[in-house]
Length: 130
Image (cartoon, rainbow, N blue to C red; front, side, top):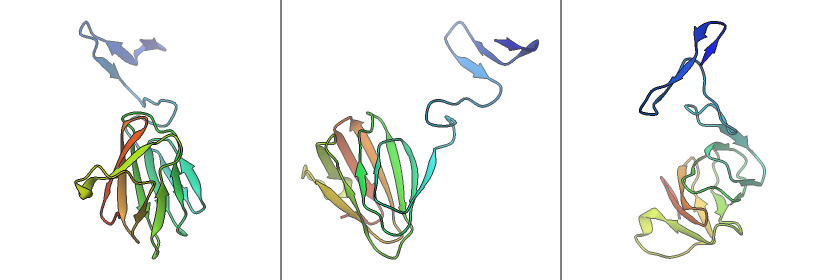
């Protein structure tokens, strides 16, 4: 692909894509996770990094299979993550059980990662999840 006589992108015979510049999709630059600051109760569904203050309650909306959501609780208080109506099975990774949680508690100043293994199944892991 050429723009103003300069090579900007190419696809080789094996299907490998090479680009000069920034590649974006409907969420953000594909190399940089989207960062969102949250201070009030919010439903989250998009992949990205969420920086939470003021101890909001978060609810999983309808994240797609394969989505990875990182949450940092920058508060002296714990906060709640609810599974929402679309996510029908939410487990804590460190429990080593198949216990389905409707909500989990994220500790103060903790980092949590939610991995969507399909559109209804989430595994929550982190530094202080219960």
